[in-house]
Image (cartoon, rainbow, N blue to C red; front, top):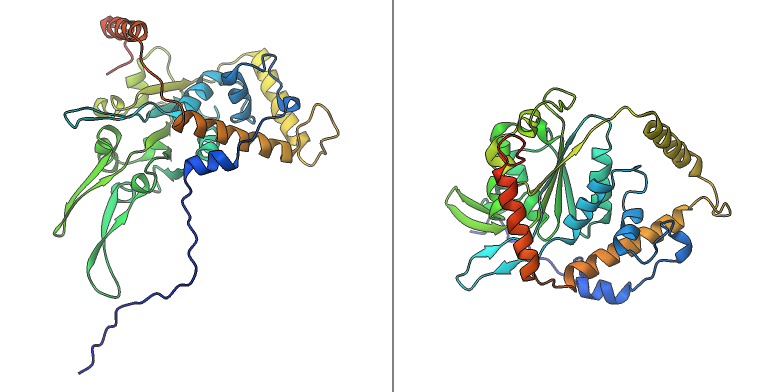
Length: 321
């Protein structure tokens, strides 16, 4: 008797590597940013130039942009002699009023990050974020199917509308944000998968508008166990200011006017020049992430410890749950 099922066989004569080595990318794209594309008065300040290249369509929000740039660079991952691993990725939560460019900042991060996976609160589930057990249609055997955080290993996972996610689905990422692993024990499969990624989430306040008279925990409406896993919570408020509103309106109109205009205008940056700035920004982020190994000095360690103790001593306006 002949078998009714045959094992699949793949014959190939050429293989293309999809994942590139970051060191090779740095060697191939050692680009310099032309001085004509820099509007900052201090062209020797690296962070000022990076701020200008990151999310140029968003007016203002310099503090949020600095935090997102630091998230792309990340910290220094450490493995102690005892085997304990200290994560170097930074988890950030954007919370604020509607129409404060939270989604635009997420898209800018996805565009600038070497590896980024996007998802939404309503369009994702717990198994979709971590991993699920599926059946192979040909062999009938069970197999693991990776979720968003596993696919974003060594990258960034962006979750928009984080407040719309159900409570059961949010519990699934607790282990990911702290231990950066996904542990599965289902259908006879026991596995631990790496999810070494930074989490960037955006959420709206539970009251629609942010109430400055309440604590951040009361406005966000997320459990304290989840808020404690975010290293930084950024508040984006919609302040009514005539001067600020005028500047935002002029910036938006300038973006619409710039579309389709050649680079002959000295006050206008063409799309090709904008692409060059993004390529240079990605190269600098990779260089800072993989080529620079910062060392924590005794003075910096003492300063951080004192600031943390002072922050914990505040009982009324503390930012940690």
